[in-house]
Length: 576
Image 1 (spheres, one colour):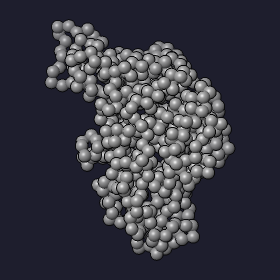
Image 2 (image 1 turned 180 degrees about the horizontal axis):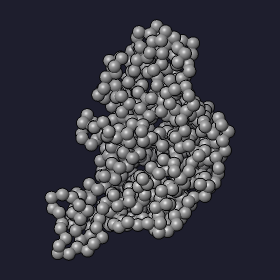
Image 3 (image 1 turned 135 degrees about the vertical axis):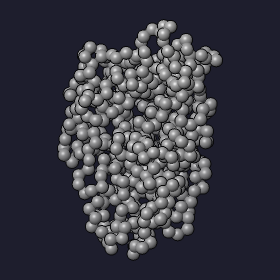
Image 4 (image 1 turned 180 degrees about the vertical axis):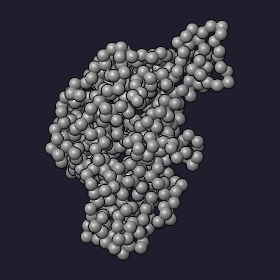
């Protein structure tokens, strides 16, 4: 059986009749159809909410590990190696050396992005239908503007990852088999047009609750789009509209209830001590949203386990998507055994319950932190934010509270040292577990790998780095250095100079600041650095001396799309 292709995705999402209504046409009133689902503001807002839900679930909350919902964030590239729980060679998820038109990752995201586009198109088109009743033109414009932002959000991924793709700008109501590719520039220009409209009408960040994109998100994305279009002044202006809006600002001091958080340290012994810094506070539950006092936040996914549909709530069925950042990223430190075969306890506070699915690369562990000798100076690399030394946590162990070393652990831990003792970025872990689960061995509360806090889609620190990139490309390295230093000053890192500024510095700074937040695959493909970073930092390429074909700067068009598109030629990217 063939997989779903582009045209049928659109039809499945919003089935609409193409027949003209007549006197015999029935219009159901006791259940929703496309004809009666878009009649008022509340229904259109519900349709927008469904796109946000699709984005949240598609990027972050697919079933635990089965759907690999972390593949845009740096997996299998330069930030994280795909690991496993054995001494065997690590997995390759993308299978870069054999990347082809049947690759599951490629097909998954092609379908995902077009599903968001289809939903946005339905909102945009139906807002002008006679059946849609609006209290004001302003209400309609705000809904349409937000839908156009979300459409641009999907298309910007597609343009960076595939180059030119079919531009579908209206709701598809009948089967269509003659899609043709627009050029990459045409796709970016469409994104720019959509975002320009969105900016006119979307509410500002101070008018919204968390989870919904504000006008500032449209400016942020427009800055990136303008860079791709080589409109560097336009990119600078768009970023500046957020940076100087009088509402957003970098958080430069500890904030929220976690500013005074205390912890006994990773030994779990002795008196508690102050345990936080500004960067630590950015990633704690209750600190993610603008409304919660975080002026750096622009757009987040929203989590609320106390309500049905809020994700990870107690009523969730077994097959409901889970947000499990804690589970995906980091070593299985709780399976460390001492030389007497006594296994560690799972201590969920600032330890979490990762399963070594993704392990930090050498690039993210050491290369980026050694810059300007800042390894012990940059707070983003502090003990609060990255743990590199592991300790015995089981009181029954002779070595309880001592550092785990290869001389005091058992052979299985030595054989699986990377999976057990690799560094762990603590931004993925809740400082205090919700405690909905109890560990069977230690009897201590645990989150069982689930993540209950929100997560950033866009943060002001990235806006600064986008503007720095635009300044650099405009040959204004002094201004670029100033923007980079705004981030580095907050991190207590050594300032950079104009002569330091290049795209490699910006990519490294993005890795330091946005690890696990930015869509790293999108960034590397947008900047033309994917091939270089694979060859330098991807374990499989380095270990096997594999040269990635430079012609493969784009992903392949899924074969199923080309074969199903019988009415026109959907051209494949070169190299596949």
